[in-house]
Image (cartoon, rainbow, N blue to C red; front, side, top):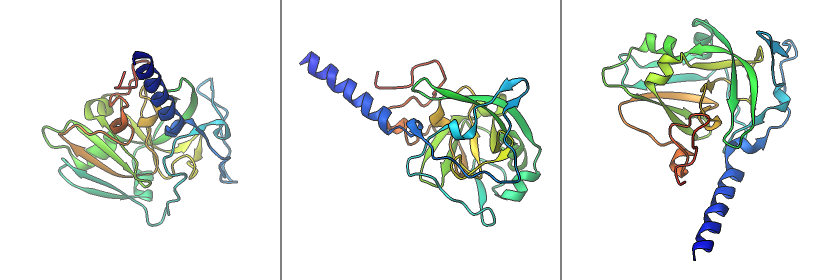
Length: 222
């Protein structure tokens, strides 16, 4: 019985890993012909976009830039509906950040976008706010601690390796959750909710750690 239970646990873990969004090798994205992808940034080599793996629960989402808005709601002083052009007009963040998957692989990239601090400066934050939930066009969701987002100056990227995010990579916005496993790096973000409650997202509700710190245990069922 002990052997059977152990084998059942291992089988469950293998199944979870196989269906986890970050194991899928993406199809080669279509880059804008007028943009040239960077190979190096700040003296460091970058992983080319066509070699980066993808995480998606329902395949690539295609979002119309002209009609897109990012909603910011919850424990804020002022709800926002930011268009793509309004996001581009906010102060720009540009940095090298590595993405690590729970499987042990990862990739190095240059990310350009807008920090959540810039957005929260516009919306304001109410006392007692502790967590931020990210909702995506494919139904995916995840959450992160507000203190982490503020202290690390975490960004929402709209460019990758100095080219506009392709649909494969999460256009118009991907969360750059530095120091957290890949399932926290939400793509196709359409809505941000600030809350004082804990929240278990898509993979977290299936046994993955809600903290997801790289180098620490990723599975709550162990």
